[in-house]
Image: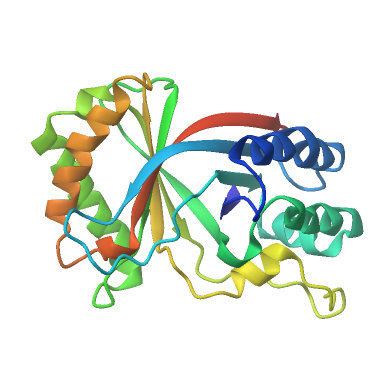
Length: 251
């Protein structure tokens, strides 16, 4: 499967609680009524996170993120159909009613499942969004991440606490609507995808509990940061703690 990840924050004048209610009870219901080719729809309520490193003075990160959305499709053709179906385009444009399109980050991504010692379900999900240094080749970025990830787990002694790990990386080329069906109307997602790429890959790590997971991740991420000095632009990277909300699953 292939997925579209949308990282967003609420529009001006809206509280986090109002954003969450609208996203789940209005927008989620709208999409569920007409899923077209969406096979699985996950929303994630962001309740904490951090950016950069201690001592950074040049952080280039939009703070105050409220949500990570992941939409899953069987293939690229299914994803492209979002842009050609009139009802779905209405759903996409509904984002302007609750989300700030100017700061949205969109990635069309493939997922890679990473083996863990003690696999299982976990209540806490942590997203780590990473920006590579210019000197690092995009084709080798997953190997850079994997080596640092393995070392960080070993050095932190937290490998046994992790229940699941996914690595998500951009597909080689983002899709565009076919010429005969391409609309002159632009959705909020179209606009976000046209923006400069701010993230070159992200990991998702599951832990059992919200009470203890952040401490395990802190030990891990401190080692990860040390292991990736000169390889990852930490001033442009960040992590988010989230609670998953399944809107539907037709996979």
